[in-house]
Length: 282
Image (cartoon, rainbow, N blue to C red; front, side, top):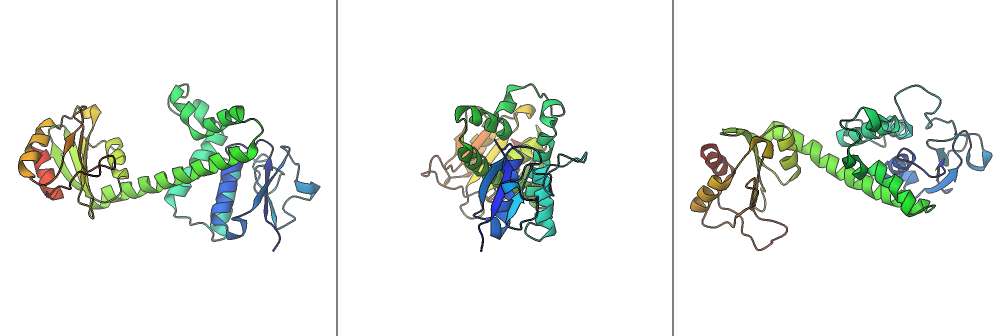
């Protein structure tokens, strides 16, 4: 079988590289495809007519089916590749995590980060992947392979995080034990997915409790915006739990039983419902 080739423009950006990532990750024939670069515009690999060679796919360049520069539609090369992979059965349409990633990439490609996103002038956006890629090009000028490898590795990490986030949203809605505290509503979930902690706080819960169903460890996080103080809950839990090791962070919003940073901690003997009951009255 002939070597598969993915073509994008010189100094590939945060549209061309994610498109490469999608093709390599989801299309088995392009898993080991090599990347070739051509000048931006209608230029093509070896000056062949675009989309004429099944072994060569042009993304974000060349004027073909994966180049959006001649349309006014709200799309980009990455989105066109994703839609094609879905239509061909290589990617799943109901992969919510992947869909959200593609949506954000499309927004970035249309400049939403500079005028539609909240507080676009904030320094926090310089930590965003697409801006880090720009900085990387300055640090490692001309080292395209390094730019591509870094961005693809980062996209794999974002995909993992987004999968965790989507799952967390579903678990909170489906399995969450909802309860009331003096600071506001709380939720407890029996799950290994630590992503529920951040998701629940962002959804407005004052307190979130996660108990690992296999290991038995418990993590409790309170919301700073709700001015949660877990000091009293910590004392009551210690009185009721003669087995587990607990740690209250100086912030008073983080109460931990078990940590990857301290593998000597012992899991609690308390059930999720018992911890929820303590939080309700503390």
